Image 1 (cartoon, rainbow, N blue to C red):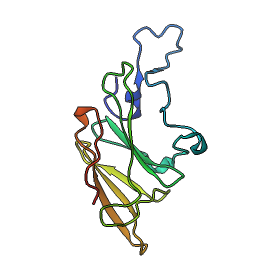
Image 2 (image 1 turned 45 degrees about the horizontal axis):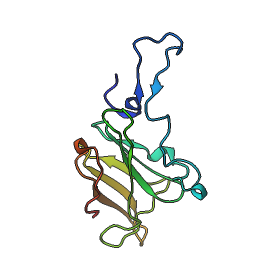
Image 3 (image 1 turned 180 degrees about the horizontal axis):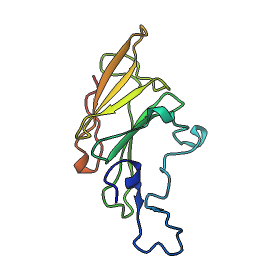
Image 4 (image 1 turned 90 degrees about the horizontal axis):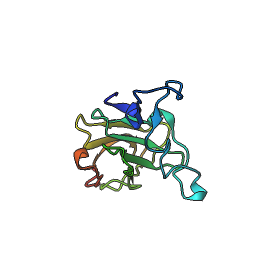
Length: 146
């Protein structure tokens, strides 16, 4: 079983008869928050912004509505929900954190901090650091975003 990335969203059967050797998604194959924004979902994802933490438990992306979203993947996969957090539209310094195709997302080695490269009000590039709590706890608890 792969230990990192989106491959950890799948369980690999030892008996692959009848499955064609394909992995079976244990999170339902999608996030419960997906879908159209008008239906309460998160909208489409800028594919170039998807970032998986080195620990393999978290991922983040920017969507087409300008939001930056982070999620924790449950460690057991036994009916546990994916913990999803939408980061605030501004950091603590009042600078906008608008996710677009140019947004850069980079995780710290332990998966606690997310660096967000974005544009400030004056259009200069800035980096905000979001403290999202310890991944081992399973729950994502956003702290300071500076």
